[in-house]
Image (cartoon, rainbow, N blue to C red; front, side, top):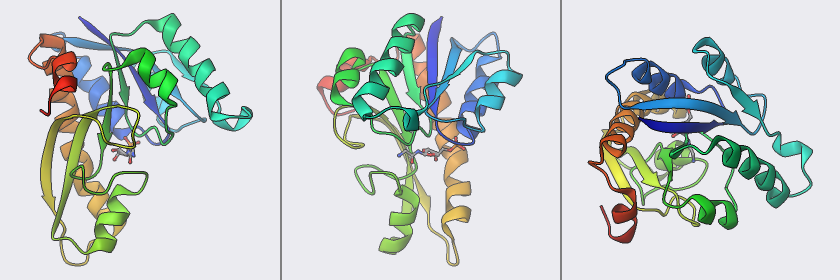
Length: 199
Ligand code: GAR
């Protein structure tokens, strides 16, 4: 059984989908903890599913490194097999990434390497592209530059706003995330191998 720690910043709708999937005894992964960089609304999902939640409040630390040191301590205590960044809107410092690489994965609301960063949906809309997408990647020390584990195209529709487009992207992200975590758990995806060569 693969143990998974999930890190969030926001509403945690993708986290919730993973919690629901992991509730099925046949699913080969379990969420063991949910961490956040703020008092994120999504922590309520963890609560509802009886999963411990914790907050390492970014704003209470004087540097990203100090914040990440405490976050790293919490993760070391938990010793998860996998860390899922599910809407964590903070960059992890290289030292923390190096400690866990390649066992941190991230969901992103664009077809990487297109539109990396914090505003993947907004940037795709602003660029006027006819389609964007959703991706699940291995985290490396760049911004959304790690090996791609799964991705899918999603059309941009006339009249789309950031919200309507993001609302159509998220269900695809959820499906990809649940599938990637399952495939990591069953050994169908070998993260070490994926990180040595493009997927
Ligand atoms: C998701 O679309 C996720 O891919 C995105 O934040 C959203 C979180 O939604 N992450 C990033 O943009 C990271 N660069 P949720 O809180 O409802 O799951």
